[in-house]
Amino acid sequence: MSAAARPIANTRSAAGLPTGRLAVWWVIASEVVIFGGLLASYIMGRLAHDVWADQAAHTNMWIGAFNTWVLLTSSLFAVLGHKAAEAGDGPKAARFIGLTMLGGVIFVIVKAFEWTGEIRHGFTITSSTFWSFYYTAAGLHALHVIAGVVIMGIIANDARKNLELHRVELIGIYWHFVDIVWIFLFPLLYIAK
Amino acid sequence: MTEHAHASHEAHVHPNYVKVYFLLLALLCVSVIGPMFGVKAVTIFTAFGVAAYKAYLVAKNFMHINVEKPFIPYLVLTVVVFMFLFFAGSAPDVMKAQGTRWTKPTWIDGTAHAAPGAHGAEHAPAH
Image (cartoon, rainbow over all chains, first blue to last red; front, side, top):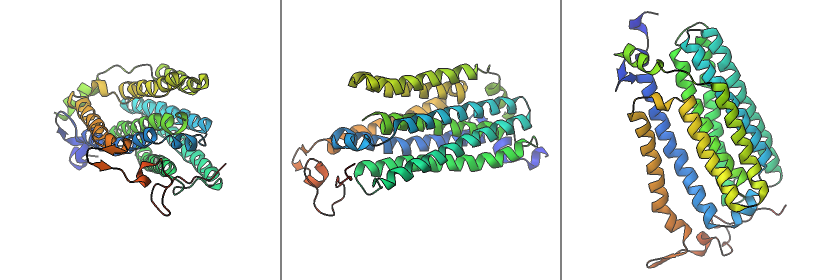
């Protein structure tokens, strides 16, 4: 692909770094506000109402811990993919992105089984304010996981043909942020009881 | 300028990602084991203190925020500060039943039984 035909995110820099990477950091900054506001609201409610602790006791810490392990492992694959892309090895980067996607898919499947069990026990989004926060926070996070998996599929398809390798780093930054959000959701929803 | 921007970012040495990964897994184990002692202070430290350190490790080693242009970490820190400001501004109203010249309705308070159909009613099924 000629330089003239390449996307602007790869050919122009703003503020000293490629526009694409700047855009991803802006997305992350806005996501910090979204998730930060949600988690701050949850913490306020949790500290104000002791009864939430009784409801939090129904969440399964081992499932949360397993999903944390899955996301940490997928983050390792994402950064190894970035390293491969930086070395110019597109097919290897694509394989690592594929493994990262697998982690995202496992995370969502485990979440689906977990939620099914909780809903069958009567804990729905309308059961109480705690469960409203639980499903909203975990659901919003799961939507980010699904979006990441879809985008990674597109990027992996290009990367295996050695095209647009800079995007491997960009999706990696996003994926690590999704990982960080879960790092905070795990103790809030599964440990603090 | 683009080439320069790429070069300045990519010139950094990659850390040992596998080593960082195993450190993160060890910290995950600490988070899980901490609450088993049944001591609130230990639980809070192992859950939230360790979570903050894990997030720092991921941001530094996987997101490479430490080798970005300085305004990137400043940008992220600024929005984190906004989050704390939001908390500080809202928490007194959410967490206190009474304030200067106002009293919170009982259905918001959460200490009283909710009115039928009121939002925030705590009626989780008994299991």
